[in-house]
Amino acid sequence: MNDTLNGIIAYLKSVKLEWAKITWPERKQVIAETVAVIAIVFLFTVSVYLIDIIFKAMFGLIPTR
Image 1 (cartoon, rainbow, N blue to C red):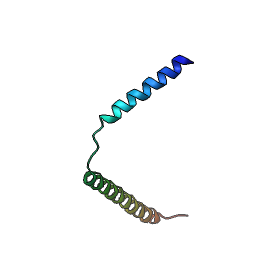
Image 2 (image 1 turned 45 degrees about the vertical axis):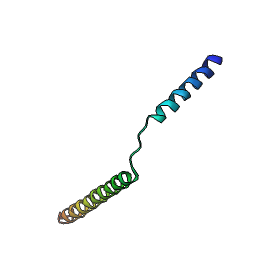
Image 3 (image 1 turned 120 degrees about the vertical axis):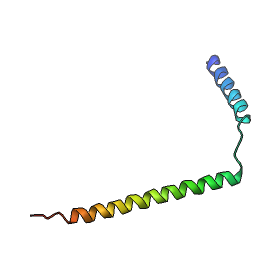
Image 4 (image 1 turned 90 degrees about the vertical axis):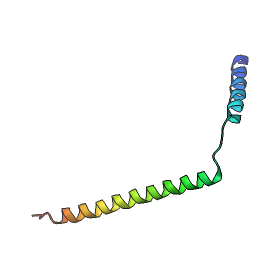
C-alpha cells in the first residue's frame, strides 16, 4: 500500500513539473483557430446537406411501381 501511495505522489509531482513546461498560445491565436474550425465545420455541414438534397431529387426521379 505504501509503494502505491509513493508511486501516486511521484506521478503527481512529475505531472506538476511537466505542466510548468507547457507554453500556452495567445488568446488571439486560440480565437482565430476556433473561428476557423467552426467555419470549416459549418461549410462541411452545408455541403453534406446540399448533397443530400441532390440525392433526394435524383432518387425522386426513379419511377416506382
